[in-house]
Image (cartoon, rainbow, N blue to C red):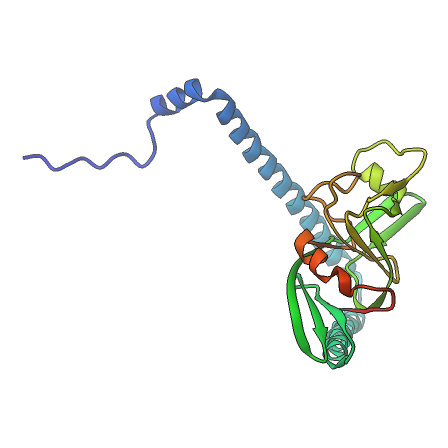
Length: 239
């Protein structure tokens, strides 16, 4: 009696040809996805390599004393940032008034009062980006420190969409950039220009895969749940 044969680890070439004949479009899509992934990985790898080589070149032109001073300054700046963020976190926990606290690195927002967490929400932080066209460019980064709410917009309120948003989204810039409900049913404007919003159903931000750089994207149900508590003057802590 013969032992059962183990199937080959990879299908024979004939199987691939049969798959191609049966599902040509699916195979093409899969190949395109693989090619796009490899292209993105290659671009990121090339950028990292250029950054490393530039850093190596700059450090090679420094004296030993200059390299030590640069390393010391970098370590000092990182330490100061950690201390500052820890102070902001403690300030949030000690605030006796109702407030919002956002842990930027973990992507969590908390509705708190007197150190008690009333609601925990997942959020998405818009990645740091250089926006606009030269010479009018602005670097938008994730907020840090304490802010306050300056405006709370409803679906019937208009939001003046920055011109770069239309350009970044590949949309024509309209004559009027005032978009009613542009931030969805509830939009929150903070001091410094940071926005808290949920994906609207229309307008240039009506894309759940896109997050405004330097702003906070929430689930609509979470934002609707805390909306009655949001008002100008409410503190928002980012750490």
